[in-house]
Image 1 (cartoon, rainbow, N blue to C red):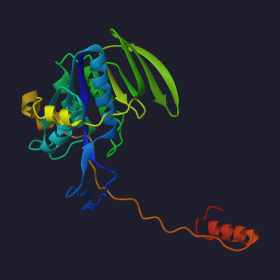
Image 2: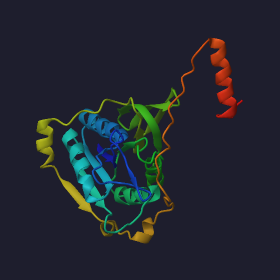
Image 3: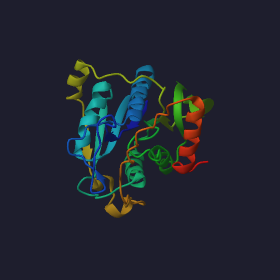
Length: 257
């Protein structure tokens, strides 16, 4: 089975993020595999182990993404591809990424493509469905279970706290939701093997694309942190007095009553 995983390098949101000149300051920031993409990598490895084939992880971005691709290889993926746009593009968006990935995948005869449900930095959830649309193959989002029998596929997907079962067939693109699996940690032998696994680097020219073909359709004007929350107020005294004070605050300050 020919399996591809779409992988994104994202900020580690557990680390402190700072803003400078309307952009996230990357100096000293920690980067990781987008957590939802980790579910996709793990599921791809499990499908390969059960049905045979090969897992290739693909990322679009700068050469710094090589670290995250090597991590996916250490988890158990077979090959990695970095489509380096650092010298070709100043700005990009979901359209840009989708167009590049679809152009790369169009002649790969992929049986199964997996991606994360959303990226934790942007949260749009657009890239997976856009790629499937450009490749003219079916897609199913937010999956929590995947069963493959030949070319037939049975999927359970999350629908806002409930679930539904969908039956479809390969080729197929799916996006992984939390609960699909428990991503493995790269083992020491896996890390050593990853150093010898192939990691190819491509540029837009290799895909017969130029900057105009993948020009962003949207523009980020500014990025800013939410305002700091003020400290809460503790009401004291008898219950009746607390109720009266609460109503006063809700009326005069919060202006909700």
